[in-house]
Amino acid sequence: MSTLNDFQSTASRVYGGGDFYGITYIEESQNVGDGLFGFIITELSTHEDCRDKETALQRLKSAQAELQVVIDAIETLPDETVKSER
Image (cartoon, rainbow, N blue to C red):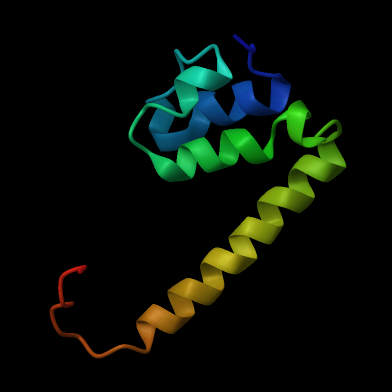
């Protein structure tokens, strides 16, 4: 099993109000039922070439920008119940 690096450990300590603080291994992070948390841990992985603070911040800011685009698009939808997934 792969131990979390410093960026991942920091994320697990603060994400979700600390709900994932006890996670020690990358493999554990993928099975907690929170896709966004798993995504963050993956993006901050040294196996994905995230080896410095600048890269970590760039990846998180890029994800933040993409999420904002989705938020903005959803805000333009009418306030009605969404049809179920098919």
